[in-house]
Image (cartoon, rainbow, N blue to C red):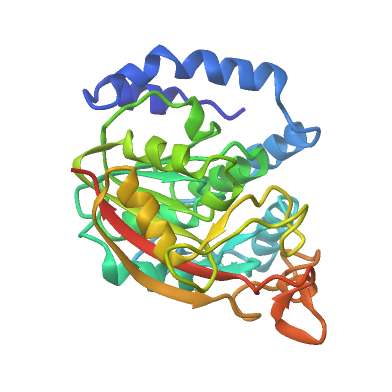
Length: 324
Protein backbone atom coordinates (compact mmCIF):
# COMPACT_ATOMS: atom_id res chain seq x y z
CA UNK A 1 0.00 0.00 0.00
CA UNK A 2 1.26 3.48 -0.87
CA UNK A 3 2.27 5.36 2.25
CA UNK A 4 3.94 8.65 2.90
CA UNK A 5 5.94 7.85 6.03
CA UNK A 6 9.34 8.52 4.47
CA UNK A 7 8.11 11.91 3.24
CA UNK A 8 6.82 12.75 6.71
CA UNK A 9 10.20 11.80 8.16
CA UNK A 10 12.00 14.07 5.72
CA UNK A 11 9.85 17.15 6.26
CA UNK A 12 9.87 16.66 10.03
CA UNK A 13 13.63 17.25 9.91
CA UNK A 14 13.51 20.17 7.48
CA UNK A 15 12.82 23.54 9.09
CA UNK A 16 11.52 24.86 5.77
CA UNK A 17 8.77 22.26 5.49
CA UNK A 18 8.06 20.87 8.95
CA UNK A 19 4.91 22.88 9.61
CA UNK A 20 3.31 21.22 6.59
CA UNK A 21 2.84 18.37 9.10
CA UNK A 22 0.15 20.50 10.78
CA UNK A 23 -2.26 19.79 7.92
CA UNK A 24 -0.93 17.16 5.53
CA UNK A 25 -1.41 13.90 7.52
CA UNK A 26 -5.10 14.58 8.13
CA UNK A 27 -5.59 15.56 4.49
CA UNK A 28 -4.02 12.33 3.26
CA UNK A 29 -5.99 10.26 5.77
CA UNK A 30 -9.18 11.80 4.41
CA UNK A 31 -7.98 11.24 0.85
CA UNK A 32 -7.37 7.56 1.53
CA UNK A 33 -10.76 7.16 3.24
CA UNK A 34 -13.08 8.99 0.90
CA UNK A 35 -11.64 9.93 -2.45
CA UNK A 36 -10.23 6.81 -4.08
CA UNK A 37 -10.79 5.98 -7.74
CA UNK A 38 -12.62 2.72 -8.43
CA UNK A 39 -9.48 1.18 -9.95
CA UNK A 40 -7.10 2.41 -7.27
CA UNK A 41 -6.99 -0.92 -5.40
CA UNK A 42 -6.03 -2.78 -8.58
CA UNK A 43 -3.38 -0.16 -9.39
CA UNK A 44 -1.88 -0.64 -5.93
CA UNK A 45 -1.81 -4.40 -6.52
CA UNK A 46 0.13 -3.77 -9.72
CA UNK A 47 2.66 -1.80 -7.67
CA UNK A 48 2.99 -4.64 -5.17
CA UNK A 49 3.66 -7.07 -8.03
CA UNK A 50 6.30 -4.80 -9.53
CA UNK A 51 9.87 -5.87 -8.72
CA UNK A 52 12.08 -3.36 -6.96
CA UNK A 53 15.13 -3.12 -9.20
CA UNK A 54 18.41 -1.36 -8.50
CA UNK A 55 19.75 0.00 -11.80
CA UNK A 56 23.40 -0.42 -12.59
CA UNK A 57 23.10 2.45 -15.10
CA UNK A 58 20.72 5.33 -14.35
CA UNK A 59 20.55 8.39 -16.59
CA UNK A 60 18.28 11.23 -15.42
CA UNK A 61 20.34 13.88 -17.19
CA UNK A 62 19.43 12.95 -20.75
CA UNK A 63 16.12 11.22 -20.10
CA UNK A 64 14.63 8.80 -17.59
CA UNK A 65 16.60 5.72 -18.49
CA UNK A 66 17.36 2.75 -16.23
CA UNK A 67 19.43 -0.27 -17.24
CA UNK A 68 20.73 -3.30 -15.40
CA UNK A 69 23.57 -5.71 -15.92
CA UNK A 70 22.86 -8.48 -16.54
CA UNK A 71 19.80 -7.46 -18.53
CA UNK A 72 16.35 -8.72 -17.63
CA UNK A 73 15.35 -11.91 -19.38
CA UNK A 74 12.71 -11.81 -22.11
CA UNK A 75 10.19 -13.21 -19.64
CA UNK A 76 11.06 -10.63 -17.00
CA UNK A 77 10.75 -7.85 -19.56
CA UNK A 78 7.35 -9.15 -20.63
CA UNK A 79 6.15 -9.29 -17.03
CA UNK A 80 7.39 -5.75 -16.42
CA UNK A 81 5.75 -4.55 -19.64
CA UNK A 82 2.41 -6.11 -18.67
CA UNK A 83 2.36 -4.49 -15.23
CA UNK A 84 3.21 -1.07 -16.61
CA UNK A 85 0.61 -1.45 -19.38
CA UNK A 86 -1.97 -2.06 -16.63
CA UNK A 87 -1.30 1.52 -15.48
CA UNK A 88 -2.29 3.07 -18.82
CA UNK A 89 -2.88 5.68 -20.10
CA UNK A 90 0.64 7.11 -19.79
CA UNK A 91 0.51 10.78 -20.73
CA UNK A 92 3.86 12.36 -19.69
CA UNK A 93 7.24 10.84 -20.45
CA UNK A 94 8.94 8.97 -22.14
CA UNK A 95 10.54 6.38 -19.86
CA UNK A 96 13.02 3.66 -20.77
CA UNK A 97 13.08 1.05 -18.01
CA UNK A 98 15.14 -2.12 -18.44
CA UNK A 99 14.16 -2.62 -22.07
CA UNK A 100 10.55 -1.48 -21.67
CA UNK A 101 10.08 1.80 -23.52
CA UNK A 102 6.99 3.71 -22.41
CA UNK A 103 6.09 5.87 -25.41
CA UNK A 104 3.83 8.40 -23.71
CA UNK A 105 1.24 10.68 -25.30
CA UNK A 106 3.42 13.74 -24.70
CA UNK A 107 7.08 14.10 -25.59
CA UNK A 108 7.68 15.82 -22.27
CA UNK A 109 11.40 15.69 -22.95
CA UNK A 110 10.86 18.24 -25.71
CA UNK A 111 9.24 20.64 -23.26
CA UNK A 112 12.12 20.07 -20.83
CA UNK A 113 14.61 20.89 -23.58
CA UNK A 114 12.80 24.18 -24.15
CA UNK A 115 12.66 25.03 -20.42
CA UNK A 116 16.12 23.96 -19.27
CA UNK A 117 18.31 26.60 -20.96
CA UNK A 118 16.43 29.40 -19.18
CA UNK A 119 16.50 28.06 -15.61
CA UNK A 120 18.73 29.12 -12.80
CA UNK A 121 20.93 26.12 -11.95
CA UNK A 122 18.88 23.50 -10.09
CA UNK A 123 21.84 22.02 -8.22
CA UNK A 124 21.14 21.80 -4.49
CA UNK A 125 17.64 23.29 -4.79
CA UNK A 126 14.41 22.38 -3.02
CA UNK A 127 11.79 22.25 -5.78
CA UNK A 128 7.99 22.12 -5.97
CA UNK A 129 6.36 20.83 -9.18
CA UNK A 130 2.67 21.81 -9.22
CA UNK A 131 0.46 19.58 -11.37
CA UNK A 132 3.37 17.22 -11.92
CA UNK A 133 1.44 14.42 -13.63
CA UNK A 134 3.30 11.13 -13.47
CA UNK A 135 6.45 12.94 -12.37
CA UNK A 136 8.58 12.82 -15.52
CA UNK A 137 9.97 16.31 -15.07
CA UNK A 138 10.70 15.64 -11.39
CA UNK A 139 13.22 12.97 -12.36
CA UNK A 140 14.78 15.33 -14.88
CA UNK A 141 15.11 17.95 -12.11
CA UNK A 142 17.06 15.41 -10.05
CA UNK A 143 19.17 14.79 -13.13
CA UNK A 144 20.12 18.48 -13.00
CA UNK A 145 21.28 18.14 -9.40
CA UNK A 146 18.20 19.19 -7.42
CA UNK A 147 18.50 18.26 -3.75
CA UNK A 148 14.84 17.30 -3.19
CA UNK A 149 11.71 17.52 -5.37
CA UNK A 150 8.10 17.55 -4.23
CA UNK A 151 5.39 17.08 -6.83
CA UNK A 152 1.72 17.68 -6.14
CA UNK A 153 -1.10 16.30 -8.26
CA UNK A 154 -4.43 14.92 -7.05
CA UNK A 155 -4.84 12.47 -9.96
CA UNK A 156 -4.52 9.01 -8.42
CA UNK A 157 -3.35 7.20 -11.56
CA UNK A 158 -0.44 9.63 -11.80
CA UNK A 159 0.52 8.81 -8.21
CA UNK A 160 0.58 5.09 -9.03
CA UNK A 161 2.61 5.67 -12.20
CA UNK A 162 5.08 7.78 -10.23
CA UNK A 163 5.43 5.14 -7.53
CA UNK A 164 5.97 2.47 -10.19
CA UNK A 165 8.81 4.44 -11.76
CA UNK A 166 10.29 5.24 -8.36
CA UNK A 167 10.35 1.52 -7.48
CA UNK A 168 12.11 0.77 -10.75
CA UNK A 169 14.69 3.50 -10.11
CA UNK A 170 15.92 1.82 -6.94
CA UNK A 171 13.22 3.30 -4.66
CA UNK A 172 14.72 6.77 -4.97
CA UNK A 173 13.65 8.92 -1.98
CA UNK A 174 14.74 12.33 -3.27
CA UNK A 175 11.45 12.83 -5.12
CA UNK A 176 7.92 12.44 -3.75
CA UNK A 177 4.48 12.93 -5.27
CA UNK A 178 1.79 14.06 -2.83
CA UNK A 179 -1.85 13.76 -4.02
CA UNK A 180 -3.09 17.24 -3.07
CA UNK A 181 -3.82 20.45 -4.93
CA UNK A 182 -1.93 23.66 -4.30
CA UNK A 183 -5.03 25.18 -2.72
CA UNK A 184 -4.65 22.62 0.08
CA UNK A 185 -1.08 23.65 0.87
CA UNK A 186 -0.13 26.10 3.61
CA UNK A 187 1.93 29.13 2.62
CA UNK A 188 5.33 27.52 3.11
CA UNK A 189 7.57 30.17 1.51
CA UNK A 190 10.12 27.35 1.36
CA UNK A 191 10.99 26.33 -2.20
CA UNK A 192 13.90 27.63 -4.23
CA UNK A 193 12.13 26.87 -7.51
CA UNK A 194 8.44 26.31 -8.25
CA UNK A 195 7.23 24.86 -11.54
CA UNK A 196 3.65 25.21 -12.77
CA UNK A 197 3.36 23.70 -16.23
CA UNK A 198 0.02 23.08 -17.91
CA UNK A 199 -2.08 24.14 -14.91
CA UNK A 200 -2.98 27.83 -15.11
CA UNK A 201 -5.65 27.57 -17.82
CA UNK A 202 -7.55 25.07 -15.68
CA UNK A 203 -7.89 27.55 -12.81
CA UNK A 204 -11.07 29.58 -12.44
CA UNK A 205 -9.06 32.36 -10.84
CA UNK A 206 -5.65 32.45 -12.53
CA UNK A 207 -4.30 35.33 -10.42
CA UNK A 208 -5.15 33.42 -7.24
CA UNK A 209 -3.10 30.54 -8.66
CA UNK A 210 -0.15 32.86 -9.27
CA UNK A 211 -0.37 34.14 -5.69
CA UNK A 212 -0.46 30.54 -4.42
CA UNK A 213 2.70 29.78 -6.38
CA UNK A 214 4.39 32.91 -5.04
CA UNK A 215 3.52 31.92 -1.47
CA UNK A 216 5.47 28.68 -1.85
CA UNK A 217 8.71 30.40 -2.88
CA UNK A 218 11.52 31.74 -0.75
CA UNK A 219 12.49 35.36 -1.32
CA UNK A 220 14.62 35.34 -4.45
CA UNK A 221 13.09 32.03 -5.55
CA UNK A 222 12.29 31.32 -9.18
CA UNK A 223 8.90 30.57 -10.75
CA UNK A 224 8.76 28.58 -13.97
CA UNK A 225 5.33 29.02 -15.55
CA UNK A 226 4.21 27.21 -18.69
CA UNK A 227 0.70 27.64 -20.04
CA UNK A 228 -1.49 27.90 -23.10
CA UNK A 229 -1.41 31.32 -24.76
CA UNK A 230 -2.85 33.07 -27.78
CA UNK A 231 -1.20 35.59 -30.08
CA UNK A 232 -1.76 39.23 -29.21
CA UNK A 233 -0.76 42.17 -27.07
CA UNK A 234 -1.12 42.61 -23.31
CA UNK A 235 -4.86 43.21 -23.69
CA UNK A 236 -5.72 39.93 -25.45
CA UNK A 237 -7.30 36.96 -23.66
CA UNK A 238 -9.45 34.09 -24.91
CA UNK A 239 -12.29 32.85 -22.71
CA UNK A 240 -13.41 29.60 -24.39
CA UNK A 241 -16.88 28.12 -24.26
CA UNK A 242 -17.63 24.70 -22.80
CA UNK A 243 -14.58 23.08 -24.39
CA UNK A 244 -11.23 24.05 -25.84
CA UNK A 245 -9.54 21.37 -27.97
CA UNK A 246 -12.10 19.03 -26.40
CA UNK A 247 -10.81 19.87 -22.90
CA UNK A 248 -13.31 20.89 -20.28
CA UNK A 249 -12.43 23.36 -17.53
CA UNK A 250 -10.35 25.71 -19.65
CA UNK A 251 -11.16 29.15 -18.33
CA UNK A 252 -8.66 31.77 -19.52
CA UNK A 253 -6.03 31.68 -22.26
CA UNK A 254 -4.17 35.01 -22.26
CA UNK A 255 -1.51 36.21 -24.63
CA UNK A 256 2.03 35.71 -23.36
CA UNK A 257 2.27 39.48 -22.92
CA UNK A 258 -0.88 39.55 -20.79
CA UNK A 259 0.45 36.64 -18.73
CA UNK A 260 3.58 38.71 -18.08
CA UNK A 261 1.37 41.55 -16.83
CA UNK A 262 -0.50 39.14 -14.54
CA UNK A 263 2.77 38.00 -12.99
CA UNK A 264 3.90 41.56 -12.45
CA UNK A 265 0.53 42.45 -10.90
CA UNK A 266 1.08 39.61 -8.41
CA UNK A 267 4.38 41.16 -7.39
CA UNK A 268 6.89 39.06 -9.33
CA UNK A 269 9.96 40.81 -10.71
CA UNK A 270 12.32 40.13 -13.61
CA UNK A 271 9.44 38.54 -15.54
CA UNK A 272 10.45 37.36 -18.98
CA UNK A 273 8.87 35.37 -21.79
CA UNK A 274 11.53 32.85 -22.78
CA UNK A 275 9.70 30.60 -25.24
CA UNK A 276 6.54 30.35 -27.32
CA UNK A 277 5.81 27.16 -29.22
CA UNK A 278 2.85 25.78 -31.18
CA UNK A 279 2.19 22.19 -30.06
CA UNK A 280 2.92 19.84 -32.94
CA UNK A 281 1.26 16.55 -33.82
CA UNK A 282 4.61 14.87 -33.12
CA UNK A 283 4.77 16.24 -29.57
CA UNK A 284 1.27 15.14 -28.50
CA UNK A 285 -0.18 12.03 -30.13
CA UNK A 286 -1.73 8.60 -29.70
CA UNK A 287 0.68 5.78 -28.91
CA UNK A 288 0.40 2.14 -27.82
CA UNK A 289 0.67 3.48 -24.26
CA UNK A 290 -2.12 6.07 -24.71
CA UNK A 291 -4.65 4.69 -27.15
CA UNK A 292 -7.52 7.19 -26.89
CA UNK A 293 -7.85 10.34 -28.98
CA UNK A 294 -5.06 12.90 -28.80
CA UNK A 295 -4.26 16.28 -30.37
CA UNK A 296 -4.94 15.36 -34.01
CA UNK A 297 -8.57 14.53 -33.15
CA UNK A 298 -8.94 17.82 -31.29
CA UNK A 299 -7.98 20.01 -34.25
CA UNK A 300 -10.23 20.96 -37.15
CA UNK A 301 -9.87 18.26 -39.85
CA UNK A 302 -9.52 20.82 -42.66
CA UNK A 303 -7.39 23.38 -40.81
CA UNK A 304 -4.85 22.24 -38.20
CA UNK A 305 -4.25 25.86 -37.13
CA UNK A 306 -7.62 25.76 -35.36
CA UNK A 307 -9.19 23.54 -32.71
CA UNK A 308 -12.27 21.53 -33.54
CA UNK A 309 -14.28 24.31 -31.87
CA UNK A 310 -12.72 26.98 -34.10
CA UNK A 311 -10.26 28.50 -31.61
CA UNK A 312 -6.55 28.99 -32.32
CA UNK A 313 -4.66 25.68 -32.04
CA UNK A 314 -2.72 25.09 -28.80
CA UNK A 315 0.31 27.31 -28.36
CA UNK A 316 2.35 27.33 -25.17
CA UNK A 317 4.59 29.92 -23.59
CA UNK A 318 7.22 29.62 -20.86
CA UNK A 319 7.75 32.53 -18.50
CA UNK A 320 10.37 32.87 -15.78
CA UNK A 321 9.89 35.20 -12.81
CA UNK A 322 11.46 35.93 -9.43
CA UNK A 323 9.84 36.47 -6.06
CA UNK A 324 11.23 39.65 -4.46
